[in-house]
Length: 113
Image (tube, rainbow, N blue to C red):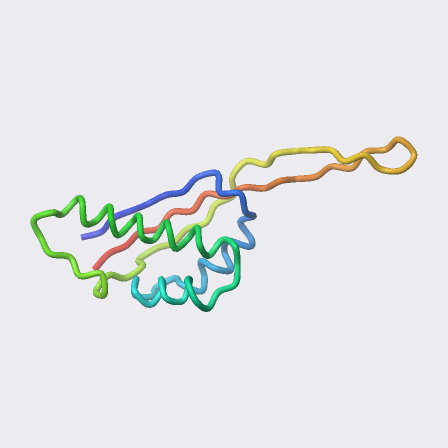
């Protein structure tokens, strides 16, 4: 049994999000949630924890007839892709402008036994 959950247009860069995703890749779900809540001091860790809980809830709603133990679930796959980029401009000296890139990413988590 496996289940997926996806968050799209996450307002964090893919590079920063991959640091957190690499830390929890392949872990058991309970251990990963504990690590994300307590040990990783990144803003995106709360978003990935929320996504992981959503994947577990998707699995529980898909298989209502079978009892699913969260401690036996493992993160089978976690994938971070780049999303669109918002482009903004900031005024600079002597009438010039510099570009600000506000990047986004898409994260997909697959949870399985």
